[in-house]
Length: 252
Image (cartoon, rainbow, N blue to C red; front, side, top):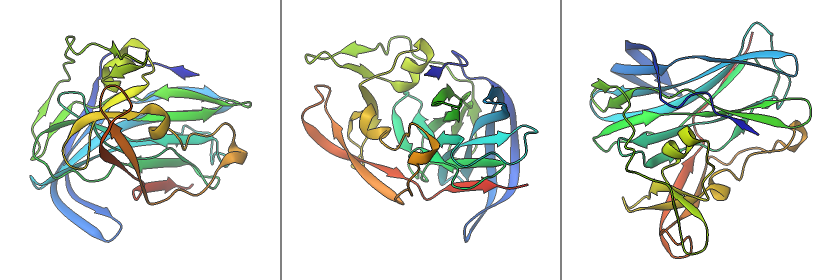
């Protein structure tokens, strides 16, 4: 089950971060845009979650989704899942993490996309799974404003002409970002491959690390590659890399 929280991204805050440290790397003069926080309760635990995007030194950008305990202390193993996604201004999926579920009892988790170095304007919007005692309830986090590499911001404006379509095999295809606003789950998601080719990834491939209950948790690979198809979902035209190197945990 997935609950759609909003139809249009909203802005909570936009601020300048002087330094950013991730693993052994340090960056300066970075700009971050953050979405509104969403608040939910599942199985007696309170949560809040949000998306953000950060641009560094006019050279790169990445997206993140974070889910945090909202006064409920450390959350049991496997009760929180996060999935980070970054889109371009045309609502095409550019990069994504896998689904990551907390491996230990922690107060929060986050997942980042890989860094993108192609100049342009981007938009971060994550997903969250919360364990409800039997299975997971899925939520779309609020999305960020648009953010360009170099730091300029703009409000999100979805292109209504980018309609969801059905291919000759009866599969839906189009922009996942637009489908989310309509409460539609696509079979084929508009994406850009490793060779900058436009095509579609299968939702089942993109979401293959989703689990049904906390007992199903398995370690993630640092990266994996899935096919990029044309709109018929048959012909493979490129590859799409899913990057899981940016996992965060927060403990009390």
